[in-house]
Length: 433
Length: 89
Image (cartoon, rainbow over the protein chains, first blue to last red):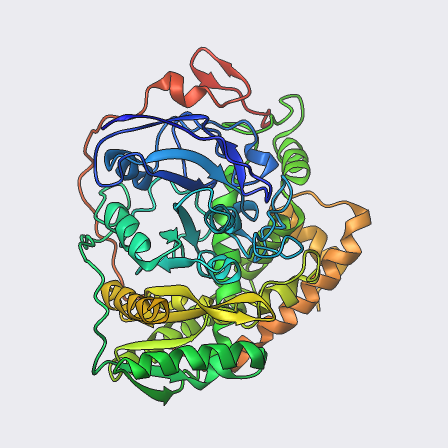
């Protein structure tokens, strides 16, 4: 039955940047289900800012393809969630409109960059939300807040209407409390779209199955190495033990190119960002550039005033990495390293069905704990490889360390999202029983 | 090592604007991040991926687009159906 949903959440963790008090919904598999949308995904008629002052007041004249599909499935689009500005961050502290707090401990960050979506779910304000994942931005907040989040295989969800940060890496993906709900939301948003030239005709029509007998799970030593909190590693190893009890076999493996993955990722994403974010100049949208000033002067003023520090840092890093004389040292080398990461995954996944490890090397940080940009980047080490390779990866809760949730990450072959979801479902059903 | 002058130049190229008060911090952070990126020097030389790819072209097709009014709605200044931009000359 179509209708209108009254949505007045008690947003004590600042998960939302905008809410729709009366959210219309239609008929379909998600009829009347409130779904929150990360604020870098265009929603017709609803302000979409990417948590940046440079898009304050911007109201998209069209819906992203994923939002179109949600509406067609009957969902009630009930609000826009907070994030690190343009998706650049691991904590949601880089939002121009203030941080989101972690519902599991409000003195800690919810992770990022889809921190608002994860917090809204963890706080029970919505059952499902869309996030986006460029280098872990769905899986990190899912792990930190104790919910489930999937980064789909690159190309399975249209990026049309997603405000671009790093096109070759990012995907829109489902987030929810349970694997079943992630699967349900994924079935609505996956599929081809001629408006995204990287979109594939691979719809998702799958009901999760908990039978993983005979499955082979690769455990990369790099996912339990230096920089990974031993207490987190213990929790994740125990979860892998549970999968073994269900009939799977765990074997160790190595991904030697992992040592270059983080550098390759940051060179690639900042390079793409420097180009993508050139469009924000105060002319077509956003705070106005002074028409009396010269072109460059007017742009500089608007961009300095309206972009946050991390966004400016990444635009400059990318500009540098692509500049004449440095392209070969940074960007070209990063692309070779990226191809090596992909080759490593393909080699390992020819022998095992899925790869498992921790999602994040630690539990959620305290607010303000990480102020050094490089230290912050290093915490993405376990999530960026899947983006570089384009493979599917899910994070699901697998216990706690010091009272904070720990995420188990399952990765699979390209287009084996169904298998990754099945393994997650098997674990979830086993610990629930 | 990049100098404050280099960072100023990059900010210039990117039209990003940088204040003298933030130049020191940005330069220091830049150098920390770039020395981490030096890891990539150890990556063996090889063919740069993607260079074997060819563009796949198709004929242009006319499809419906958004109404002009909708496009102009978010612009700060418009005139006669155009968007006003800062002066070039």
